[in-house]
Each structure stands twice: as structure tokens, then as C-alpha cells.
Image (tube, rainbow, N blue to C red; front, side, top):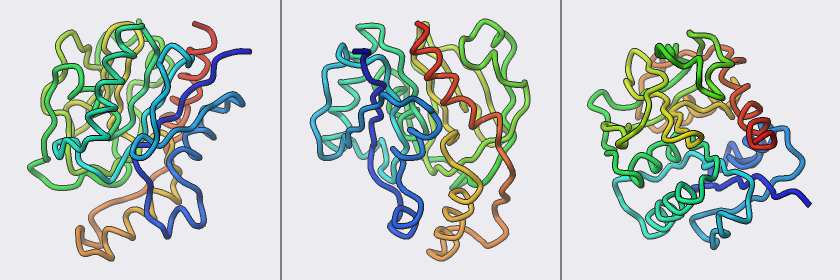
Length: 231
């Protein structure tokens, strides 16, 4: 039997969202469109040996990488192990930041507070050779919600894309270990619910973020699954 694609949840979304729409792992699984997936919640469950999986996607989180929580540091060590056995990995938001932290980059709070809503991503020169991003247009919109960023890429990382408010939107280390600050698993409903929640908590103003359709960003998860299965 083929090895599963591992979906690693680095936490859970807000209760008012999960009660109606599912959670990070559900949205990622839907985007992968692959029947053979394995779910694990890294905050409370033991991570499997990387060699038992075909690839892995690490979700976003409401935690902060700089807090260095024990479960997070355990996941960072798992990332180093995955890199050592050449496992394809895609990190999303928190996962993107944790990969950078695990492999020698740096993460910190954004000076401008939250980057939130649907923003334009611009790919860099040279992405034509990348197995995932070569399939995307040079400019596309993606959903974002984050207070921390990768402020220094890991050594040997290749920058793949940026936005007006975030220089390190996506990168690759080696052949197939990717990080994306944006959320390819979010649809417009989920993005709007995050905005509504943060407005309700008084963390942003009601007009601080806009939601757009993000069909190209959404394809990234399927491209990753296809890459893993074709590797």
C-alpha cells in the first residue's frame, strides 16, 4: 500500500469556525484531493517517523513560533529529520515559519501588526524551474492572516515569492521543502470569518482587510499532492 501524505495540525481554529466548517486538517485534506492521508495533531500527539510517509503538510496555528513551546520544538526537530531523509514537505503560515526556524532562519513579529485578507503575491524570477510554483501565474491573490513572519530565510533557501507587506511569502529549501506564508487551504468564507473574529476582538479595524477569490493559490495543495505521488 502506498504511504500516506501526512497532515500535521499545529493547533486548531476558532470554535465558531470549526463547529460549522471543519478545521485546518480538513481544509488541507480537501485541497490535496488525495484519498490516502494521515492526520496528526502535533500539539497533543506523537509524530510518526518521516520515512513512513510520502510527504507532509504542516498547518497554520494560533500559536507563535517565538514562544518555543515544547510541542513546537519537537515538530521543528521532526522537520530537520524530514529534511535529512529528503521528504517533500509543505509548511503553511505557522508551518512556513517553523520550517525557517528549524533550518536556521529567523522568525519574529511584524512591525505593522497583522497582515490580513487577500493580498497579491508576486513570484520571483527563476520560478520556472520550481516543481510547484512554475504552475502558478506570476501574480495571484492569496489569503493571509499572520502576526509573525520569516524575517530571515534559512541558509540555502530560494526565495520564490513576495507581497507588498511580506518579503518572504514563499520559499524552497533543497528540492522539495517549501514554505508559504499564505493559506492555500482557506476559501473566501473562512477568510471572512477570520476577519470577523479579529474585528470582534478589537485587533483590527472593520475596514482593514478585503477578501477576494484565490483560485490559483488554492491549486497549490493539489500540485503538492501530485508532486508527491509522482516523485
